[in-house]
Image (cartoon, rainbow, N blue to C red; front, top):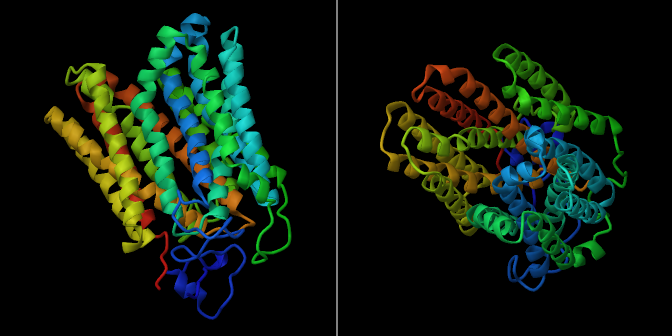
Length: 498
């Protein structure tokens, strides 16, 4: 089958086919979205049997194990952090232990992306796992809260780099038809900890102690690294000759901008703790700095929603922000306005997590029946339905069961849209920019989520005096508006006509 590629410079075309007319060969920084085998090195072997077939089994299991241990750590820390802060006498550093890890992950993403483009994902993957394991050890053995926060920062650096390296491995080792199935595994690896992670973390904290939540996960990380040793031993960072022989430069300026972006995210996360006037001043300044710093870290045209890859990244920013801005207030609404217990209120998020996994499975199972763009549009529409429904329920005080019902649509939509956005990001990439584009997607998640949560927090704090359901309703309205913006950008991601 003839493959068609869209040149990066001409991504204003409506379809990749339009951009490919007049050219029979791939162009640098281009990529087939729907039908290319993959960008970069050939797969390790003929991909018979799917992602769990003999050729990909241990690579798939190993990468899912790595995603699983990162996800479990994220869920578990949220549960036991009050215990840790009390035992280490570090309540003043409570927020920094969370926001610092997210902020510094941006630096890890950018460094890993540049490294992957220069030498392939092998070395960045190994180092990122070792950094995360070192962070776990530091946090698990911390004698005080300061050392614990240092461990969390090391974890964030390694976790950000790991996210990027894993995406590049998928791009280089799996053909395009199998990539949606790989992302089903990743989604499941996130959902399982969201279901059992908090409970298991609580049990461990009450029995053997919270330190083993960090120290015990090191073995899982080491096992996952060993399972993908085949990738590490065969991927030397070279390609199949389809791209330029020139090795991308490090571009230290991007690393500097990543540090600036990390500081902006960190300050943004603490804005709600200031007085009402200062919190908005700090917020506006932080967002302005973040927009300037993020510009060189994202594909050209992202901020103006250009067609193709820029719109893929922009859609990721909007849906992540929309989902997180509402998710943090769904249990709060059920507890404060409907008098439910925390355990029952948390079931709403559990239902959304299960729906997320289900949506991911559906798009992987039926993926070839619809285009990537169609799946993304369907997913974003489902997200918007869930968030708009939650807004209406909050505004008019409708039934509790309605909240549980509509939130399923939000999770379902995320499960459908996010894997397909990842597939399109890989499809638009070549070996010379797979790392950069993967880091851009990871940064989109971090920036979109942290910014939206900060805005929602400011709105909620400002409207608390009004009382009633207004603070919740306005936050859900914010998520709905972001979902609507995502629907617009999703229509510009491009498509390939066969």
